[in-house]
Length: 424
Ligand SMILES: NC(=O)c1ccc[n+]([C@@H]2O[C@H](COP(=O)([O-])OP(=O)(O)OC[C@H]3O[C@@H](n4cnc5c(N)ncnc54)[C@H](O)[C@@H]3O)[C@@H](O)[C@H]2O)c1
Image 1 (spheres, protein in one colour):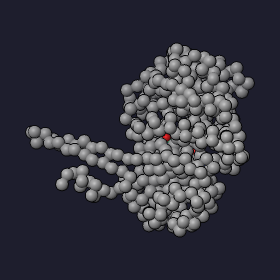
Image 2 (cartoon, protein in one colour; image 1 turned 90 degrees about the vertical axis):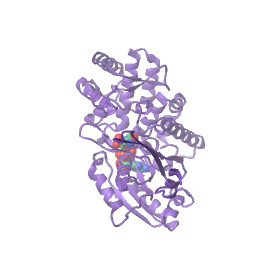
Image 3 (cartoon, helix red, strand yellow; image 1 turned 180 degrees about the vertical axis):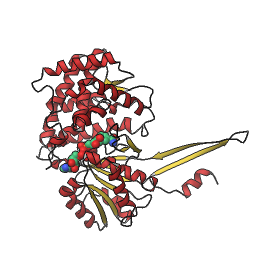
Image 4 (cartoon, protein in one colour; image 1 turned 30 degrees about the vertical axis):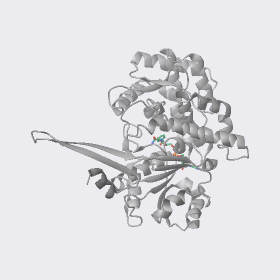
């Protein structure tokens, strides 16, 4: 019997696969194993995920016979009733752990409590039983890591309830907690087996969280899909005002909202999803995520505003090295400002902090180079800066400061600080 047929017969998972080859050295002094691991991760746009007539969750959890779920506390308050009614309507037992999930909760202690719930007597989740995770980016990152650790790898289904977790953190393989020196520094590559995106859930998002989430969509437009950026130029403000077409009856805008989400997910996944283990740094979705890893916590910015400040600053840097013309840079600044996203913050004028960020990120990206993403040859395309010398960094920071000093608010965003965030 071949090894492949044996591994099928004794498979432990419907979600993951793997195989390996072993070779022996002729001198019988060493053995070498080469192994591959395979996974399947689907992202699906759905309408009214908790309406009993929507089949997606029941299709996963009816065969399992029950559902163990980790739910963001705010989301539970707003949507927990509908979640419980859904499982009750389908006769599927549901056990939930409701978790506070603020940025300060991205810790190992949170992950330990989640793993204790999933692995304890109440749930004792089996190795191939998909956990349900319902919440924003903080919950995604921490509950995803708990699933990565439980049974050494347990599948999970993600319902991204914020814009960030719907289009970026949710389908992302990068589960994590914050490190001592840098954000999101510790974790595991463990994507959900299924991500359900339901924009109806965005109706209850605080305006600040809605706005900063859109920064991740601007990001994909700016470096991968100019058409997406054009959609945001034309409809971005309308999407914010109607919470992604969930507060009115405008069917045209609803179709645009779906198209924006789909394009953003496609742009993201065609890079992230085909490089699940970050084995190379051809990663346009890292735009805005180099220097901001340091200055976001120092300035206390909401993630999307920090990303937007770096996107804008890097666009100015790109004009200095001939990668981007000033009109394109200004067009990007205009999209961000129209949506109320920050394009400048004095924290980037701390050159020592910016240099420390570069050093940390270079190490994080494997040490060979910085690989900072910047638009090149127009918006919707990008390239990677292997290094940014001190003199160029200083010149770009100064040039960007002067450009943004022309704005009455100096380039600030609306509700850009973590402390500004209000809940519905
Ligand atoms: N792993 C990755 O690849 C990745 C990518 C992008 C961002 N992130 C991380 O994601 C986090 C930001 O994500 P976020 O903006 O979702 O933050 P978040 O998880 O803090 O959610 C923001 C707030 O919105 C609330 N919320 C979520 N859904 C809601 C809803 N439908 N209605 C009302 N309130 C709701 C949450 O309770 C929270 O208070 C950051 O920690 C960032 O580092 C991770």
